[in-house]
Image 1: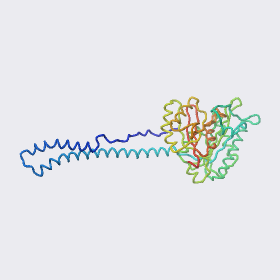
Image 2: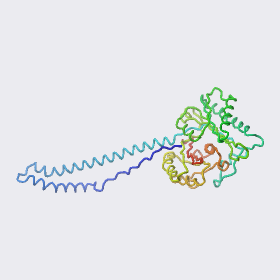
Image 3: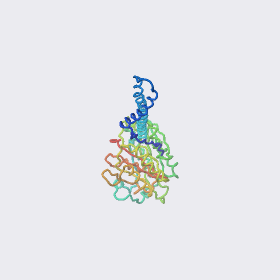
Image 4: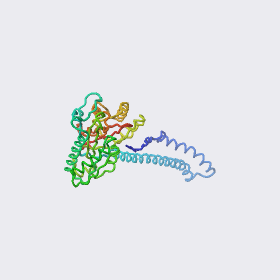
Length: 391
């Protein structure tokens, strides 16, 4: 995800020159007087000393000295004015980009569908290292893929109905983010048929779309501030029993922050813009985190926890080091940040992005902000979730 915040140059505050002191200026006046006396005397030679003579003798040095002092003062004033003007403009630019970086979308509801073997509380309360465990999959002894998918669709539609009962939106956009490359079109068609077949959405004008990249889509929704209700279903099912990738489903209802306030919606949390981080260059990654992300997206924020998933093991220390360099402390200290992972049960899950978001939104962190870090093949997305009491 693009993060177009420019470098804002710093200008060193101007200091007065060493010679800009009364002693030096009076010494300069004395030197000018010594230089002007012989000149005036040579020009006045042979004539009686009149008032004009004394005016020239004392007035010329003072006039020259005053002109130099005035030019120097004007130059100093101009430099100070330029510095002050840049400070004002710099603060305005920073405020603009801070507002841009902290722009968010409201999550007014979310849900999750997990394998029967999983207990959500076990995932929420983690102790020890950020270890990885065996992948969680659905038990197919009693149900086939189609039946599991239909159960998920049923729970998803019930979620939409309950959301619309509280928030009477007339326009709805449903997006499917299917993690399986092989069944994306089939999953999309099945969801469309299910929505049309149940007729549960009534008179609500509904569009159904297929997401190509969830992170890019979320960034677009934050930027465009649509007045529609957006509902996303993240679906991760295996194509066969031999494929043991983690399975789950998660869904979210999102509206613009302004629309949530207008509808007086019970907001679950606010998801801010994310920054896309590439694994190609550790130095560039660190620069982005310390100089482009933290000073703007985390300005005035105090994260109390971090949820992460699918981060390359050799890149995790780099990310922590640069977040620490940006003023964040993990695990130890009075204001330390607790770190949780979805990898313990969903290692290499194709929908880690949405799983990390769901667990971050539903964590009990006493209302403190939560960092949200989700990896992909070439890099990771880093973002922040705020809650109504401190958004």
